[in-house]
Length: 332
Image (cartoon, rainbow, N blue to C red; front, side, top):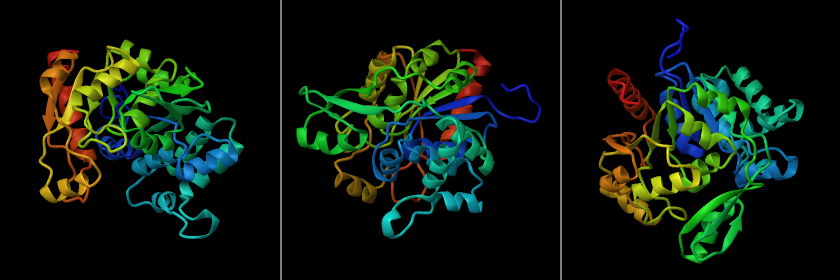
């Protein structure tokens, strides 16, 4: 726990990317003032990909999403970050991406640009790119074929009609941001996921030092399982197969506990997802336990939403409850 009387809550580090990470940050910021997000920088699609290609900077999109999540819910700056230009050459580009690109142009490094933007926005927490290196994600499929570029994996997998065997970074073993390793070393809780397994969560584990820092940590390590499978990435995979992929890429001691959703998904929503070849993730408890993880199921979905999304507040409360239970019994 933080020793500062003006702070509350355990030191929490959340690792991932995409909307899964930003969704839980919205809840976590309300249960602790010691919150760090470690964010993947392997994205190369959309507006982020354009800025990455034209300016040679790391992709800003996932970082911007985290900043939106940690900014004041009612702030004008939060609305500005999310604003997307409706037409012209900037059509679809988020203002927050451009602001971060400008700061990257004047700051000595990308992580310092992120820190300066965080200071301007007075966000609640710390956001760290997992590395400052220019990296690409490569997927190798079960039939031996491979494709380079995070944005190309979905279509290539559909074309090959086979599963992903593993992913790797190019160049391999880029150095982790020292601040990320420091955050992991002092964490009370380390969260992996939710989010795209192969393109948001696992890429962080391939950065040199991250997996080892997680394994060495005495923190409570929780994998927050996805609610649904993901078309073009994890269709047909169970919760234990998700966990097995994490462990194969990162190491055997990454996870103490799997936090899974127990809320029912409505029939209407199921039909919508079925059109995308996505179904609720099967929580195969016995297989998860064989892999060494305790399994805890809680209702974690947003109420009355069009999509099966994690509720940041429900996840945060579940995480805090589990931490307090372990702290009381000293089982980790």
